[in-house]
Each structure stands twice: as C-alpha cells, then as structure tokens.
Length: 248
Ligand SMILES: C[S@@+](CC[C@H](N)C(=O)[O-])C[C@H]1O[C@@H](n2cnc3c(N)ncnc32)[C@H](O)[C@@H]1O
Image (cartoon, rainbow, N blue to C red; front, side, top):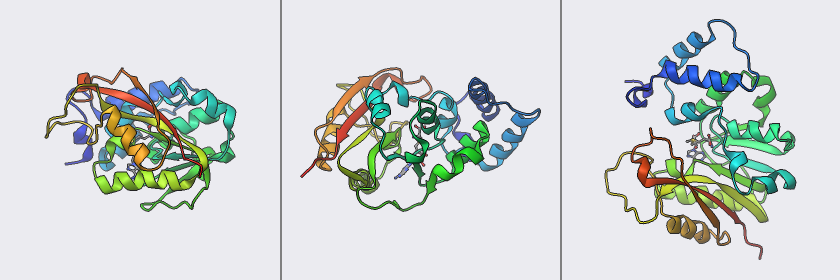
C-alpha cells in the first residue's frame, strides 16, 4: 500500500494535485499540457508523505501570523525549521524579506520536491534548502526561527524536546522563535487512540514546553478554522506562538 492511502475518503491524489495547481497558477505559474498527469504518475508511485500539505499548498499562512509584520520589518538570518513545501518561504520572498538571509531546513526532501514540482522553480529555490536527518546548524546562527505545523507532527517526546532545544541553540540571545501548531481547544481532554495529529497540546502545555526550553514566557494566540478533513477538527484549534531566547 502506498502512502497516498492516507488521503481521506472523497479526496484523491489527482484531485488534490489539480486543486493545488489551480491555487499556484494564481501566482502566475504556468503548466505545460499534460503536466497534471505527469505529477499524478510521479506521486502515485512515490506517495505523498503529508497529504495535508498538498491540501494547503498555495495558501501560505505565515503572513497572517500576528508577529509577521515585525519579521518583515526586522530582517536578520531566518531559519524555516521544518519547511515542507516551502510555501511560507516563497511568501517571505514575495513580501520582500531578503532571500539571502533565508535557510529552509527539513529532515526529508519529499515535500520540498513536491513544492518545487508545483511551483516549477528549482533554479530559483534550490540553494535555500538544507536537508539532513540530523540538525546541521551551529549555535547562534540565526536571528529568527520559524516553525509552522511541525510540532503537532512530532509524536516522539525526545524528538520534540530536541526540536525545541535545537531551535533554542541555533538562535542568538534575544532571537525570536515564532510559528504555529495545532492544539486542543480549551477544556478538551484528548482520549487515547484518537486519530489525527499525534501531538496535540493544550495552550498551557505548549507554553510550559517553550518556557522549559529557556525561551521567554511565550505569547500564544488561539485561532479557529481547522479544516474539516482534520479528524476531530471541532476539538482542535491553531495556536500561533511567539517567544524569545532569553539573554543572560
Ligand atoms: C505538516 S508539515 C509542515 C510543513 C511547512 N512548515 C508548512 O507549514 O507547510 C511538517 C514538516 O515538518 C517536518 N519535520 C518533522 N519533524 C521534524 C524535525 N524533527 N525536524 C525538522 N523537520 C521536521 C516534516 O518533514 C514536514 O516537512
């Protein structure tokens, strides 16, 4: 069974690719005849690791984050930690963030290639990407770390702790971590065995995890609008967070 089996009933790979191409075409990307079929064949064989990513590509969210206006005004070296298709990196570049200051990192290439196939921009984007199973950056290399929809996919506790610790060590003192993750609506208790994103924290758990990694007490804003295809979406919200690496 391929990983495309993870598409929900009623959602197929060809439909999802077609819809993604339509959204991305709105940015001016032109597709040659037969391109949809080429992609369907390619991804029918290889699968799509995160079908959810394909459902949202072409609708970046970074510019709706409450801290985004400060990022654009701030500049500095920025790491997109768990960049996936790099939809958000393309939005940063469109909004004038200096591309030479951006690094887009992921532990695997699959979603990066999906983004490049859909945006058809390998030449313009390739040098921004770093892919490695191990976190490859040194201490204090970045001024800003962005984390979008990564925390909720990390099931393993050690990997989660390492993820936050890496973000912390890669930032200079006073540097900013901002991003978003799916979480639990206030008052909801997650029952064991629930389908859906593997790590759904309450607002307090997220705040404690960030503070426990020696980030400053975070600002966390709750947003709705979790798509219906996310299982138990009525119990789930989006947390946008912003915190800083404390200075000594
Ligand atoms: C749901 S996708 C989100 C991608 C992108 N940030 C976005 O908002 O569209 C989650 C991404 O996190 C990456 N990821 C998961 N665990 C990671 C880790 N420990 N370090 C870096 N990236 C990770 C996955 O490979 C995947 O590309």
